[in-house]
Image (cartoon, rainbow, N blue to C red; front, top):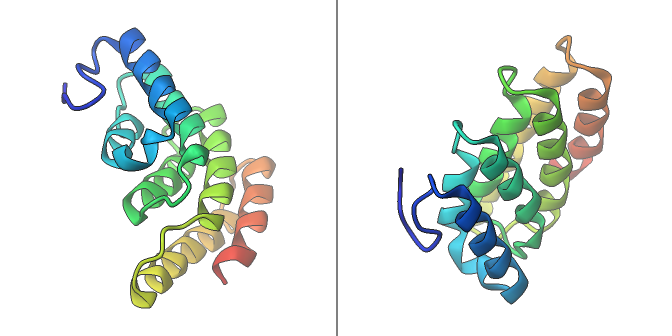
Length: 140
């Protein structure tokens, strides 16, 4: 597995401790790439959930982080609790989206808006529909 400031992701107990320390110290802001790697860690649900729970501590999440949280929310292959957690996190992350060029932000918001409309027209569970309805005003 990938190594960075969090170390070997296979040593997930130590990674969780390091993630907690980065969050408490406020340094998580500078390590969004590491957080993104944890979100993409499909073979360890503990790391993915811990990363999702950490995203709200990022004061200015970048586009890749926001896109990955949205991807988790929309992933029908994931268990329901992870998707609901991702929906809650996406709601917060959109409020704190890092300032980028107007074009980038508009494209991200348009993409998320389109995903939320698609989710609403799907057979998704009602709580995901509720989350999509909460998110839509932020991206329209």
